[in-house]
Amino acid sequence: MIQETPTDTKKVDYRLLRRLIGFLRPYRPQIGGAIVLTLVGSALGPLRPYLTRIAVDDHIVKGDFPGLLVFVGIILGLLFLQGAMQYGLSLLMTWVGQRVLLDIRNTLYRHVERLALRFYDTTPVGRIVTRVTSDVEVLNELFSSGVVLMISDVMVLVWILYFMWSTSPELTMMTIIILPFLLIASFIFRAKVRRVYDLIRRQVARMNSFMNEFVTGIGVVQLFRQEYRMTEQFREINKAHREYQDKSIFYYASFFPLVEFLSAVALSIIVWYAAGNILSGAMTIGMLIAFTQFTEMFFRPVRDLTEKYNTLQSSVVASERIFSLLDTDLTIKDSPDAAPFHQLETGIEFKNVQFSYDGVTPVLKGVSFTVNKGETVALVGATGAGKSSIINLIGRFYEFQGGDIIIDGKSIRDIRQHDLRMRIAVVLQDVFLFSRSVAENISLGRDWISDDEVKNAARALGADTFIGKLPNGYDTNVRERGAVLSVGQKQLISFCRALVTNPDILILDEATSSIDTESEQLIEKSISTLLHGRTSIVIAHRLSTIQRADRIVVLHHGEVAEVGTHKELLGLNGLYAKLHALQFA
Image (cartoon, rainbow, N blue to C red):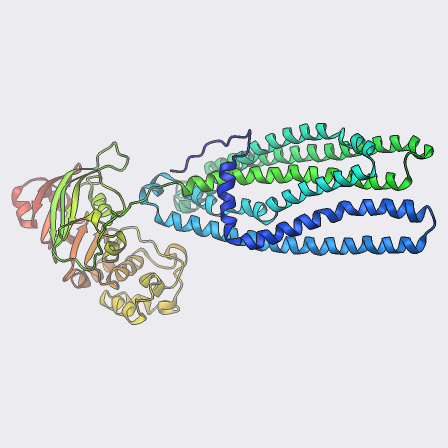
């Protein structure tokens, strides 16, 4: 499970930063070109004030206007060249940044796809969505401009100090007197903003989780008149988010005017010093003009470095959450020598299987039974008896802690999961349909399933009758979660989805419990065709749907209580007989 722990606000975690930079490796040529542009371009800005001093002292003061025009042309050329290099740098780094974000999102998505269901049992959906979308987007500025522009700002400072010192060491020393105060303010600002960024990211994750749960359960909210209570909860979450944003705005609003104030103080010191020295000849007008420009340039990269450092901090906060997800290793792994699985040959055997979802509370306690090839075995029992857990284990969606599941004489752990699931079809009570066409929801986009096979499956189950009445037939978009279909129609499509793959193992998990009588009668007419020749496991509360099973396994508190046919179990006058009597009394 992804842990929501506060981020250390004292320093940047450079280990995480190195992992982030690792995503830049495929783009090393482009990064190299950007660094070259940065190193060259960083010298062009500070060179202009230096040339300005020469133009003023050697040409304007002396009345050498032809020479002045040459310097004006040089300065304009430098401005044009610097603008062109900045344009190329921005274009190149934005190109790299967007491709890096694409790589990170694809990596996250593939990782999330591989995680076991236990991860989704314990992690809110909104938190996962935040990781893959919002947290990745936070890295945009870091990869698009942050790293390279931080190098650029450092190089600009180096060139400024070089040209300042070449112009006047005394004025240079007076200018950097202000630097310690600026560094102290920057340090305080960074610490405050890093903490606020962390709180904002956590609050965004809470907001996404709340909205996902609210929209999913909107029917329950409106049915039980909980709109006011939910509104108040969202207002509290939104209020906290707004307060954290206000704090970040306050810190920015305080820091940048302070930088401007310190810059003005430095400029005042220069003007005060120049006032007496120009008259005495120790300084020139050109030196004063150059240092005025140097001072403005000097504080700009310092301010930008602080802002970029905050970008770095917010990126580290986001990367902590991203790598927390990537480092989550809740996956069901195949054994190193896992064998392929092409077709069920003999059957399935549960041998003293013990299972717990949390590792503490037992769900299955030594369950043993067999399902021979071609048999239909029904699982019955009260809610919580362990029926659905058995289904989850057959598909290897969870790992059991004791015993073994044997398929064709091999442990299920020694069979490749991908191959096994290709030969299993499951029909659940709660049908999930994607916002795509009816045909795509039956084939699930698998190109090896033809349109004719989709239609044949629908005809075999009688679903083609209502599909033909839809506005666009098989091309009708069913909207999100199948909003345009009834519960019975959605269930029929799930049956078609199972049949079209021609599975060896068919699992029906409460597949008819939500269907109306008319739809159930329609399915009952073709369900024998669906089960024929396949190894089938049927779970149902309606005992009438499993009376024709070859064998019935009665579960009670995670244990096998009875096994037999419908008639045999009634004759035992045990738990099954009681369930039958309660349902048909």
